[in-house]
Length: 200
Picture 1 (cartoon, rainbow, N blue to C red):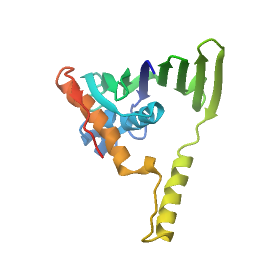
Picture 2: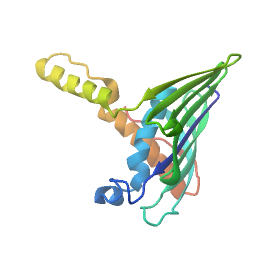
Picture 3: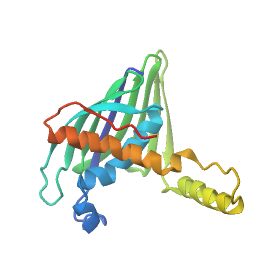
């Protein structure tokens, strides 16, 4: 990997069912934490390694939303690669994009391609044409299947050596939150470099 880019332009406004939920408004970091945690999880899964440090700027533009509602961050991965994470909570033109540029080509995952509900995954080879596949989005069906399987297997194998799906562990969620907390801390410190807390 040479560079990673994550651009999130959300559509949080009064038409969104989550807009008025009190706990999201009272949460430190507001919708940046609530929405951003999913995109950080996707980023960590896509690059296959941890974020170690961040430098970020935050702002509050849409006064109908809790502060901050905009975040622009540069991050450094443990494998030496760097990238950018940009999140706008309330955009008139929602967009979600993950892009990994490598020596042998570029992988791009784009959500909501041409108004369709799903993901367009494209690979641009070093010397070949672009290959693209569209995957319709139908909620979190696979995640729910894995969760239900883990609960039932753990119930059936009481006291045995049950191993749960690692991506469903609370530690993984805490790692995602730790990245966003570091970004928000950096933003509060005017872009100062902040190390992401290591969680085992």
